[in-house]
Length: 176
Image (cartoon, rainbow, N blue to C red; front, side):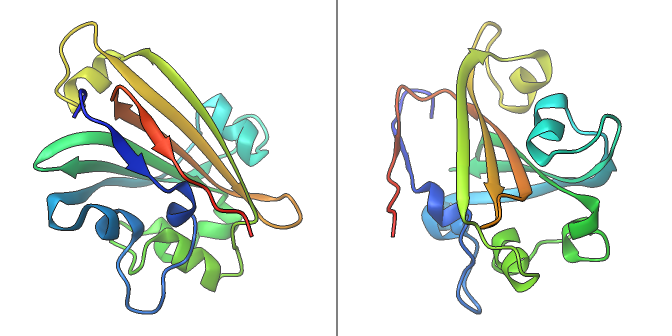
């Protein structure tokens, strides 16, 4: 996948799905794609995530760690973080698939995306990323930090994605 273009619609990944619809990745990749839920835990997030969620130092968040595959190859590591006040006692804090994806559940809880901020960084992969993504030593990755907020500016989800580095990412965002 590192030598191919990957096209994505970021808004599809933060919008709730219609009742009974699959999550955005399943819709985009179809039978070629898959996800494996690796871990759901309450953790102290990395500093950039804590800052984006406006957490105090040492304050925990709920994380859902997934590996994303295409044609049988892991192409992305995706960690989604939520404030415990939102996630505790919901499917976000349980190690199971969420029908329609997290944005659908979040919308049901009253959290709809109003503003999405994405920071993209091209960098060298660390040892764990090299192994998880089956990359050769010295390979690069794309790191994307996406923060989703409500209409009053409150962050309710921060996703950190590490992807095999394609030559080009193409995003299309429609604004109402």
